[in-house]
Image (cartoon, rainbow, N blue to C red; front, top):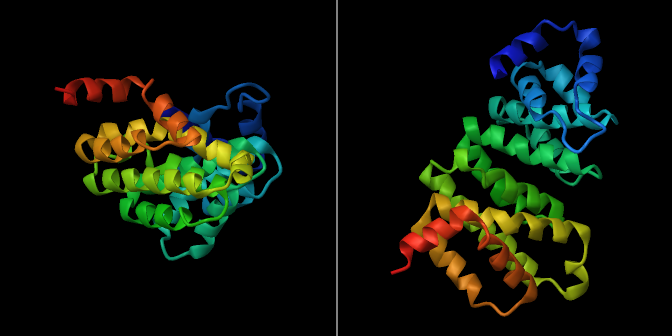
Length: 236
């Protein structure tokens, strides 16, 4: 199916591409057409990707943002591309913010070292949405077969969790911080599943923390089957 989608997109005249995508976007609706966006990311040219990433249309902006990840992997020396993704990670549109995380995953597929460097940098950002994109981007199971990236995912979860813990109560109520907390509610389980020994050691330290947001992160991850299976295996 993905290859067929890509072939279909290649056959669409450039002048008709925007209309083709929006007509099949799935929007308005609860779920956008991710398969089509993935196909666009695989075949679109640089000019179209960057043009779409700057459009107001939500789905086209999503497609352009995700596809920009492929450009970063191909052009690691172009800092403007990473800056664009960082801006989109804090975009007012939640789907576009998600596209930034998906873009990081495309980078990780081709250049795991570049992904790790970007994630480490974004985890110093003052915006919780940017940190959220970093954590969600690296905590993708297909990327964590690489042991170095798996270790970086644990570090990312730890860093983001510690940052939330350091914030005063009024900051923790900000939408960006709540969004990051929500991501950590599943990302920890992904990171631990990829590297159980190191992951459980880091996660167990959280279980002793007396903080309402940390307790929520811990309890939410404990509902995930992937983590429960590991705990059942590791517990004597």
